[in-house]
Length: 222
Figure 1 (cartoon, one colour):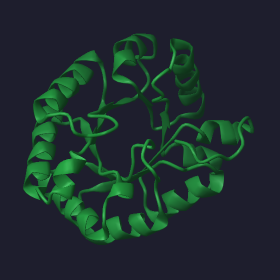
Figure 2 (tube, helix red, strand yellow):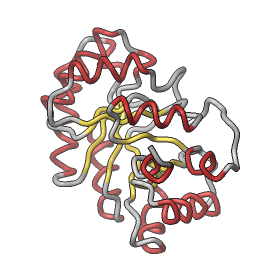
Figure 3 (tube, one colour):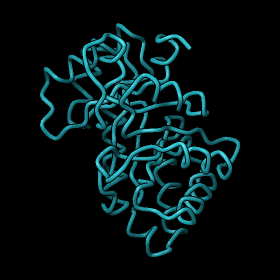
Figure 4 (spheres, helix red, strand yellow):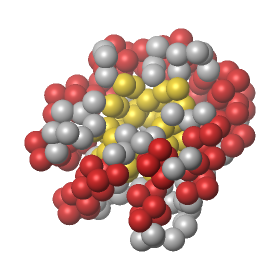
């Protein structure tokens, strides 16, 4: 697989709390140069990026990174992001609801946000590092039943990121219309290629472009 093919699956990401406009410009310029799938940026920068880079596919995060905002707040975040020019929403499930076994509540929240997104892509972050295998399987069902477009492993802010084991579990339990996004800990080109070959349509990482360009070394960060 060529570097260009791999980068076409990358959501080039900058979600640090202290991300400056210069940081955002850097990843946008790189995403244009290397034809990344999207830039994944904080909601506060969407309108400015949409104006400065109309050619870019913009992704943002909702209920990020802890997931326990009420559904109404996630709806408001999603509506504003789409109005500002975002095309893809990566939402975090209410992890407390998952741990309490309230799977139907989680499913209904996903369904609500998908209704707001309409034809725009909704990716559902389940934060695998906090879940048992049984809970992950329930989330595969919830994401499928609610009609979301992707299931996503991680925020990159938890205690662990994407693993081969979890991707294999997703493949076994998601419905045929659901795609997979791996995120967190994708720190080498070998990692990137591995997850794509496993069947991940998208990979979220801040490091892929720098690795291709030889400007960064491997490290376990988003």
